[in-house]
Amino acid sequence: MAETTFASLGLRDSLLQTLTALGYEAPTPVQGRTIPSLLAGRDVIGQAQTGTGKTAAFALPILQKIDPESRNTQALVLTPTRELAMQVAEAFHTYAAGMKGLAVLPVYGGAPIVHQLKRLERGVQIVVGTPGRLIDVLDRKSLRLDAIQMVVLDEADEMLKMGFIDDVEKILSSMPSTRQIALFSATMPPEVLRIAKKHMPDAERIEIEHKTMTAPMIEQRFLNVSEAQKLEALTQILELEEYDAVLIFRRTKNGAAELAERLEGRGFAAEAMHGDMKQNEREAVIRRLRAGQVEIVVATDVAARGLDVEQISHVINYDIPYDVEAYVHRIGRTGRAGRTGLATLFITPRERRMMREIEKYTKTSIKPMKMPTQADVAARRVTQLKETIRKAIGEGDLDLHLQLVEQLAEEGPHDMAEIAAALARMASSTRPLAVAKEPEVAAAPFRPPVSRQESIEGGTRLRMDVGKRDGVRPADVVGSIANEAGIAGRDIGPIDIRDDVTFVTVPSESADLVIEKVSRARFRGRSVNLRKAGPGDDAMPARRDRSPARPGYARDERPRPRPPVRRDESESGVRATRPFAKPYARDDRPPRAAKPYARDDRPSRGAKPYSRDDKPPRKGGAFDKFKKPGKKRF
Image (cartoon, rainbow, N blue to C red; front, side, top):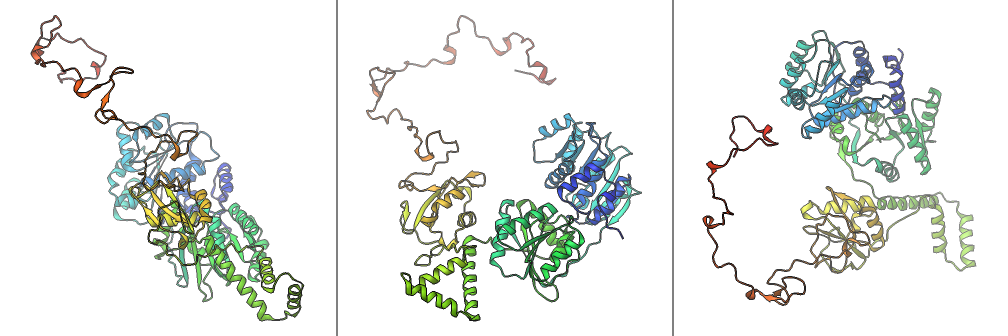
C-alpha cells in the first residue's frame, strides 16, 4: 500500500509549498481520512482525541475553498475556550502563509468587544470564536452568516460540558442550508449525537482508534524551558547522563538537520535522519548507530518509523509532537528487549495543555525534572576525567610515559604534581573543567543574616526592585540566578525579601555575571533591575517608581524632589506671601471677613432672584437629540 502524502489528498500547490516549508512530511491518520471528505463537500463527524492533528484536518480544506478576494465571512469555527480559539486562529495564519488578502479573526469573551466589532466591519473571511461571544456579535448584527460555506465544531463534547450547547444550536439554526459542517469530538455523548443527527444527517463518520500505551520500562519526565534554552539544556543533559545511544525528535526535517549540525559543532557524534534522505541513507545511519560510530540521531517522526535499535537508552522530545499517538511511538523507541529507557519531554509555557493531553491519553504522570546547571556539568567533567585516568592506569603499559614524566621532573624546575596537572589540562582541553571554587565551609542556601553592608566575606550583596508585594519567594530568587547565571544554589547566600525590595548575596567573582544575566529580567510584569546594593540601601525605603530614569542619571542618582513644606513646618515658622515680600507670622495675617453672609444676603447683581419655576424655557441644545423621550431634564 502506497504511503499517504499531503499531495495525494488533493491539496493545491500553494498549500503544499507551505507545508513543505514548515517541514511537514506526512499527514496524521485523522488528516488523511478527513481532508479528502471535506474537499469533496461532505459533512464529517470525526471522533479523535486532542493532539491528533485535527486542526490541520479542517483548516487546510477551508483554506483551499476560501475566496480571499471576497470580504464576506465564509468559514466559522466554534471552540469551547478562548485559548483554543487563539490557537486555532494562529494555525490558520501559519497554513495561510502563501495566501494574500486573507483575514482570520478570533472572537472570544474576556477581551474588548469593540476591537472585534471593528474588525468584523472591515470584513474577515474566517472567524474563530467561542459560542457566547459569537451569539453577542450576532445579536448586534455585526456578523453575517449568509455567505458561510463551512462550519466547524471543535471539541463539541467540551462545549457541552461548559453549557454552550444551546448557543451552538442557535448558531447552527442561523446558518444557510447550503453550509458544510465538520464536527470533532473526543467522545460522543447523546446531546452531541442529537445535534449531529439534526443538522448533518448524512455526515460521514470517521473514528480514529485510541491506542493504549504499555511502556512500564520507560521513565518519563519533562523539563520546563523556553525555546532559546532548549539547546543549552540538551547539551547539559547529554554531558551529565550516561547513555548508550540517544534518539532526539524534532517536528520538521529542517529542524532535525540544523540541530544535528549544532550538536556536531559542540563535539557530539550526531547525525540527522529525515524524510528527504533516501532509504539507503537512513539505513546507513542506523547501521552506524548500532555499531557505536554514532551516539546521537536527530530524527523526525516519519524517519523514525520502524526504527528498532536496542542500544537506544534515551529518547528526547526536543519538540513536543502535534499528535499524542506520535508521542507514544517516539518513546517506544527506547526500553526495548527488556531494557529500561528514559524519555524526556521539553515543554515551553504554551505547550502545557498538550502535555496534559498526553498524560490523559497515556494514563501516565510525567514527572518534572530539574534544569541542569553549569556547575553540575563541570562536576561531571571532573568525574569523567578521573575515571579516564584511572582506566588508563588500570590498563598498564605506562613505562614510556612514566619515564618521560620522571625526566621532566629531573630537568626541573617543575615537580611531578605540576607535570601531571598540565597533562590533565591537555586531556580536558576540548571540555574545560570550569569548576567554581568551593567555599571553606559548606553553606546552606539560606544562612542567618550577617552584615547589611555592600558585601560580606566571600560574597557581594545585590538588590532587586521586587519584593513581597510582588509575590517574590526565596525559591524564585534562587531559581532565576541558578538557571540564568549557572550558579549552584548552595553558593547563593542570604536572601532578605522585604515589601518592595529584595537583597541577595552571591559569590563576588560571579556578581557581574549574575547582574548581566538577570538585571533585565521581569517578574510578573515588573522589572527586576538587579544591581549591587549600596551602603544606604537598608535605611532607604524602597521606591516603587515605575517611570524611566532621566537621561544622564542612574536610577539611584536621580535628583529627588523636595518634600512639600507645610505652612507651620517651615524653618522660620513664617511664610512669604510673594517673592521678596516681608514675611508675616501665622498670627499676623489680616483677619477674615467679620461675618459670612447667608445665602439670602448674597448680592443679586441687579436682578431679582427667581425660583426654579420662573426659569425661562430652554431652547434645544446640541445634545438634546440624545435625550430619551418621556424623561424630564432639569
